[in-house]
Amino acid sequence: MDKIQIGEVFTITDENDQENEVEVLAAINLDGTDYVAVGFVEDLQNESEEDIDVFFLMVDEEGDFSPIESDEEFDKVSAAFDELMDEED
Image (cartoon, rainbow, N blue to C red; front, side):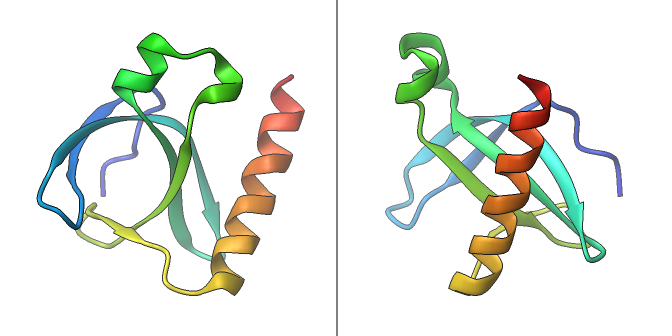
């Protein structure tokens, strides 16, 4: 799988079949699984940093994004990204 680059822009389709452009804000590998933190491109252009909604997605073997299914997994990923962001500040 190609390494996902920070700043890459992807189009994802939500549950209402609306297409949204998202930009990769961070990428992390936990227990052999790749995850990305993404924000809507529109928000990134218009909002200040604290107003941006950040979403965490799992990257499967094909390089496709999929939602994180369990709360436990989400909490683990969220905490790991929090640590990553704290280190960068």
